[in-house]
Image (cartoon, rainbow, N blue to C red):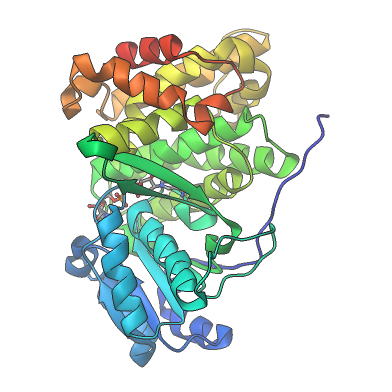
Length: 385
Ligand code: NAD
């Protein structure tokens, strides 16, 4: 077995249909009295904001409901002013990875403003001044991780760039998973954000930083996804499928939390921050191509995925089993009618070399188990275009 080291996080997780009703009681136990809610207009329209407000009562002192995809820096500044003005002591992210990412960014920025010095953790067990609560309504997995991305304007009028921050202080202290909050997630977002979670499982399996816990969680996440995703995609109101899928997302997020991601994620972040492709869409388009590129170097780690997905391996060896898992993923994406080509999402072909160069500079591409040059990354982008 290879050596391993990872950081774990002290947190409370509450999972199950109706779980959001327990939020007020949990906030009381944690001693939080003034909470800011970061969310989106669609959560307000869908009734999720009302459910959180009912649970928190007068502990909820402010709502920022304009979160946009990829967390633009000016939204962090606006929500920070709101949080500061209201004297909040904890921040709730309700929604997909964007709303939860905004909550994390504001938490760290508020600590910095109050303390008057950099808030970044000095060690892996440092605790935050302003804890984060996450209530996910997609399957993206941000609720379990110490990471967020903020999109900043490009230097000298250049294209915007998404900057990723990893800090143990932003790992949520309370995570509430309520599958009932996901019943209205439309089929396209159900599919693409669940493929994002699939990607977390695959990249965790072959991560250069993998450990026994991340591997077990990744295989569990794949197992949950195999049958629940098609069912939840076909019938959004299937609570049993939604519950299974959300439990799988929890496992995928847990796997993601303690490992470094690879080339696939590096590419998706650049496609999101610099080309405006929604994160789940980028994941769905890129995943089969990135997995195929990595296949020869990662077959031993990917092979168990075939068993977890319930596929009879195409052959007796690891390469055949790993290839079967990758083919299964590509076939599922096609069968559900999910996005498959970057050209359909406004990415100009002429922009591929620039995007490839940006991705090749990312820490995730550099942490890929198989070395990848800018030319390799460009070839992957071309195959996905
Ligand atoms: P998102 O948060 O951008 O949401 C996409 C859309 O779905 C939004 O319009 C939102 O309002 C809508 N939505 C969310 N839940 C809904 C529901 N239940 N019903 C109806 N509509 C709903 O998308 P996402 O894919 O969840 O998150 C992507 C973002 O999260 C990216 O910025 C990505 O980088 C980040 N992310 C971070 C991590 C991490 O570890 N930090 C992990 C995964 C994703």
